Image 1 (cartoon, rainbow, N blue to C red):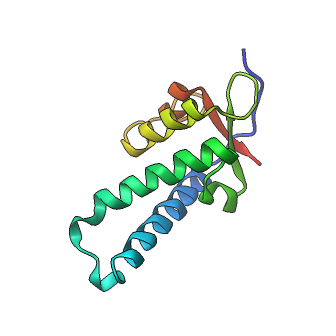
Image 2: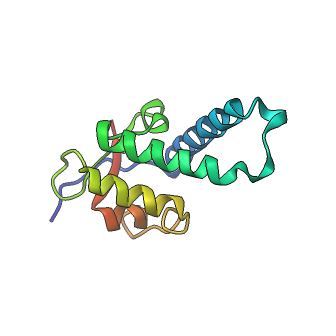
Image 3: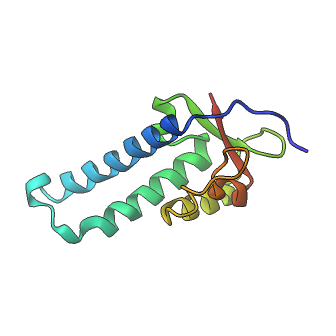
Length: 123
């Protein structure tokens, strides 16, 4: 059985996700020469950068850029410790598929969190 954690609202989750996605979008746009010069087929580049940003920052500091801004962090569900790099990779890979991120269990955890053994909580 795991400890009780402060639940993170859906609004905070989606806002943090939006900040991460927009940051990656603007980085790709800037590298392409600006918003007007970005080719329509750059969505895979944005997705790859988003995956890398979320996976690396989650593994290293337990929170992505958006999580930091909105005061939330990722911890292990079992004991509340820092997530491992493998958990960060699993969580990020399932997050980019979208379906696992928008499907929740009875405790309000996304399926990407459940399969990676992690949980979002207030920092």
